[in-house]
Each structure stands twice: as C-alpha cells, then as structure tokens.
Amino acid sequence: MATVFARSSRGPRRTLATTALAALALGACGTAKTNAGAEQTKPADAVGGRPDAAFTAMLDKIAQSCPPSAPPEAPPTGPAQTLPSDGVKTPPSDAIEPIAPTAGPEVELNARDWCASSLHEQRITQALLDLVEPTPTKVRAILNDLGYVDERIHDLKQSGATTRFFLDLRDKGGRLCLEGSAAGEMTVVDTCVAPATGPFTTGERKQ
Image (cartoon, rainbow, N blue to C red; front, top):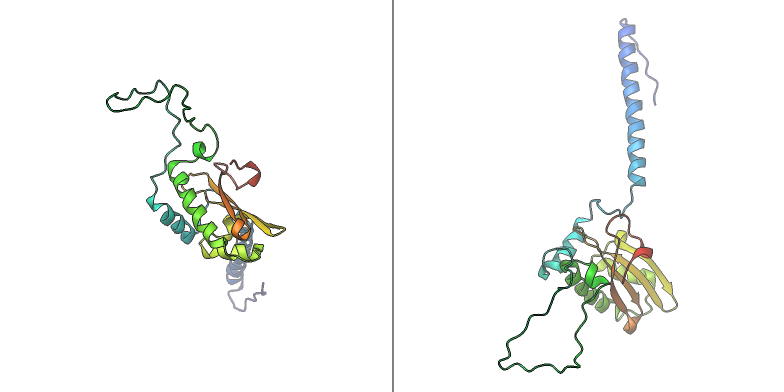
C-alpha cells in the first residue's frame, strides 16, 4: 500500500480523512482475500450448488420424453384382480408369477431418472464403442463432447485396456448416476443410485 502524504495548511483534518480512506482500502483488500479463499474451498460438485447451465440443459433435453419427477412407487399389494373369463385362457396352475423388484435402481430412482438412465446409457455406449485404446484422456474428451462436465465425472481410471468412470447425474432432487467401463466393443454403461444429498461418493452407490 502506497504511503500518503498530506501537504496542506489544513493538515489535521486532511490527514484524518486520508488515514480513514487508507483503513477502508486495507479492509477491502482483506475482504477480497477472504472471499477468494471462501470460493476456493467451496466444493465444485456439491449437491445444491448452481449447476452448469449447459449441463442442466442437456439433462433436460435427454429427459424431455420422460415422465415428471416423482418418488418411486411401491409395488402393489393385496389380492390380484380377477379377469373376465370370456375368451381368456386360464394360466396353468404351475405358472410362475413375476416378482416385483424390491431393491436396486428400479425401486430407488424416480420415474424421470429411471427413464432417462437408459437414454444416457445408449448415447454414451454408442459414442465409446468405436474408441480405439480408450485412455482416460480420450474417454473424458468424448464425455465432454456429449455435454458431461468434468465436475460430474468421477474416478476416471484405466485398468489394462479398460477405462472406468462414474457420472453424477443428480438433478432436481434425483439420485441417478452411471457406472461405465470403456473397452471398445465390450463397453458397458450401467445405472446406479447415488446418495440423495452431499458430495458424490462412489463408495455409497447402489446397483
């Protein structure tokens, strides 16, 4: 901070004013540094923060054909309804009835995310199928081109000829995430369930 000299016959008053201005300037510098430090310590991928506008627009575009967000519905309970007997064949007594899922993404994701998950899986898988030598750098570049921002790409690591990664696609209170393994024609992308709140933690995901 430059030293300020007061050269006036009204020395005391101007000196006091100059000193006050200098103190305000020092206080502003300290505030700026404090604010800068606060920004640096803020998690980039914290849920509840302001997401990237282009990323959110991409999620909305993919899910535009899906139903609105709603909590997952429990499987129906109670006796099954009896169908009219006219023209309907009676199933054999040893027929196996389908069992409603009780765990996994089908139960824990809302309708919008469950619908959108397959759309994300298809577009990412298609983009990675023809990738020769799928290194983390190449996989990240493709994911970025598809609209997935770096803050939502986690644990991007190579193991042999395969590069694995996770995508945090939580939006509007959802819990959707994807787990992928890029391996050319053997590429696989699966749906997973992320924690409802807090930073994305791959150790707590569910498939």
